[in-house]
Length: 401
Image (tube, rainbow, N blue to C red):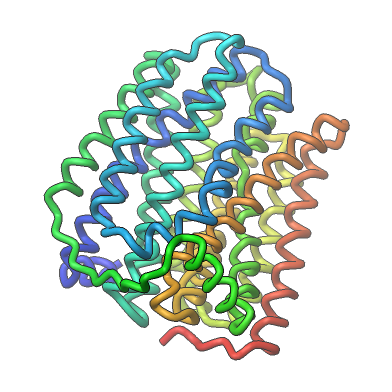
């Protein structure tokens, strides 16, 4: 933890961006718990829950092809402020959703809100390698993931109690307020980065990116490796678990909050435990460990308290997988293509997460048990381990130093 504190002290821009992350992410989880609580209280079908979870990721997929080109040609601060503004408006609009007849509105708002959130995230992750490099960049990515996890932990836990005590409306208001505070903080920060002017329009920039990927296929392989981490899109699975196993023993909002918060505890402590294995050889085994942890969760799922324990174990390996594979991609691409490649990387990651959410609902609707669905997800991480091992052997992958 001392390394992260030192990094923040020496990098004032990263410090301000991290503070904004902490506030914005913390608020976001309030509306997340509120949305799923609202859906379960409406007694919607399994397919609706899964579709809602899928929308959280699908929005980022559609905007990715052109967002990277925009990121590489627009000043990041202006773009990020605009995207936070969209998220504020979308979050306030959630107050209009109250009945099943409003589902179309809920879908629209989620799509807009998450498209802006994904765009913001891609912009920030494209900015980091322009102001940091080497191990500093890796630590910044780890810090980003830890902040996300810390916010996830407290946000999910507290939002469960807030929704239980005061209802979903207050959760949406608090979420919007957090985004507004983040907007003010970002407005007052100075970000100095050079925009590389290419003289190309958006279509030409996209074409140039595809040509680059043909010349550097290792970038495609690294993007696919990172996409395996999208299998951890457990929102639909957790909601269905709560509805099937736990709703009779604990309030829905509390169960959702505690389960997500317990996994987030693992997300926070994971990088500290696994630091010595964060290299190309060690990541293969962390993929394997993630698969085993998911299988353990499937085995203990029927018991609420044991499921909380398993959720912590599942979270331990996820942060390291996410941050290391992301940094490895950033390390192995040219600066000119940061925005575009990161955008396509996020598109693949979000596609993986959306597909996972869809398949959870689809298999559940076909009467597959939630345990078996979870087992399939674990098998995906085993496949990821084999694929990453092949990529390291067959491609010229530069180690993170």
